[in-house]
Image 1 (cartoon, one colour):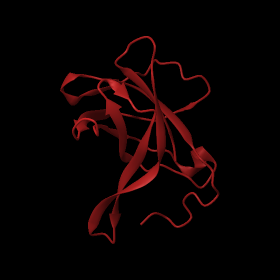
Image 2 (cartoon, rainbow, N blue to C red; image 1 turned 90 degrees about the vertical axis):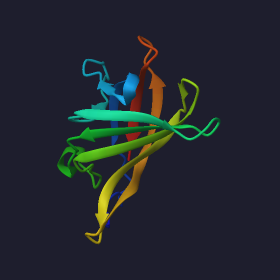
Image 3 (cartoon, rainbow, N blue to C red; image 1 turned 120 degrees about the horizontal axis):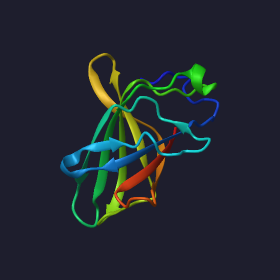
Image 4 (cartoon, rainbow, N blue to C red; image 1 turned 180 degrees about the vertical axis):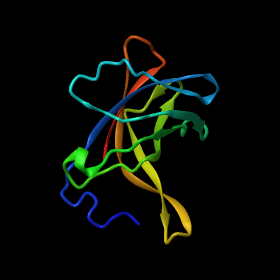
Amino acid sequence: WMDIRWGNSGERVRLVVALRLLAGGRVEVLEDHNFGLLRRMKGVREGSWRVEGKFPQERVKIELTQDGITRQETKCDVDLPPGKVFLSVTTLGTALGRQGGVAIEQMRFLIRRERRIVGVFSSQPILEEEEDALLEASG
């Protein structure tokens, strides 16, 4: 289970990552994108994406492996453990929905691995190239 103190303060941590969704379900992290003052999601090393469902209920599912962020770094009671982060957003053709969910996997009773929703993200196209999406997560 999640630490019972996780997120009790109501604080939110905003992280950004710029991605290019490539053919074959590969994800490229755009390291050189200018985020201004927003906090970048650390150490995103690899990722994949796929479309699930049938029109008009399709969802883009994005899986990223990242280094996490500690409570010392966020300066509040919200952290993101290292490992996989799962993003899910509706799609209509090549257009992504404006907001989706963020989940992580954790063990329940040391037996069962399950996904826990830890926040939401918003998606925005990056104007330089249509295939890129700026994903801003808060959790």
